[in-house]
Image (cartoon, rainbow, N blue to C red; front, side):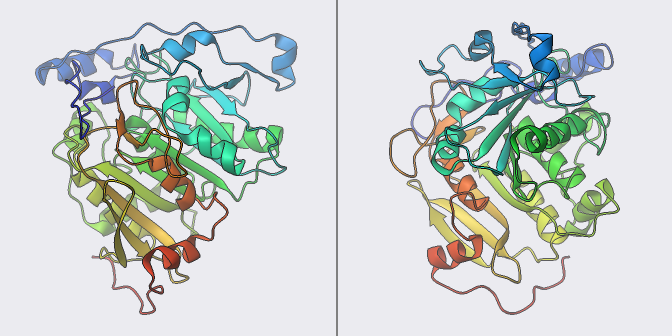
Length: 405
């Protein structure tokens, strides 16, 4: 995956830290990726592909899911939890133009018409690794929503990154983006998922792919949470992707918003609500990207870039900035996590606001981001607008926002 530090014990940099976010599809531009990586002083590292379990044709034809292969739990995870989360692999969920793999986690006593959260892993990770360590499963069990884990492969990308910067994969109806959309459609047809309550979140390259899904399919996703990710349409190739990651790209809110609107020109709203999570010390995808994401999505929502609420949350004083819609709900929020670098903030423990595991890189002991993301999605049974008022003690803004600059 990518370079990570924690507030207690820094993790040494891995080889090819920046290049890991950018491994390209083999046979098309792999040579260019390697050349760029080497020019920057990095070497691409390609993990061995995980073994795939065969699925009986009869089960596949009926849309029945099969257990995830045990080998998946070991991918890039020498210190994975002793008891892995049980994921089920969906054999067929559509044409799958992006050649992704779909897994689902179904809590016991899943109600009819459940909400859905699509989870997108980071580079050099797997669906199993993300399920085991992110903490999302704990809240799926608690609040009874369906989890869909999309997984890419070394055939798609040398470092198992989602191709967030590649035009064949980051546009509506194309490649990996279309495959993830088909997973959502399958969740509706196979599990009765509520199409009004579909959400997406992801880490790093998965966070950047979260931006892709929100922009390309604003009619599908009610909300998303981008963890250590980047704005939509920041990059168009490997070279520009490096610049987006570090030092970052500065565009006006209007320009960023136009990129989102151009991703699905026929969509007039409503737009997905967006939460941004970023480590203040992230050297790989620099914190400037949190500001650009804020600029992009506040402008899409017709809001200015001055927060309506600023507070601290969690055990580590994470700065939470909220940008409110006219009804008082949080249209956009930015969470700036102190003392961490590149990764998903977790807080292992049994407390109500704790979750996750830190036995593998890029899950950093800090704050349980999955707890707050679940609440932001409104999946904890709370009303998002009421939650804002309860937490801050002040009513929503009543004056209209200033025009986006």
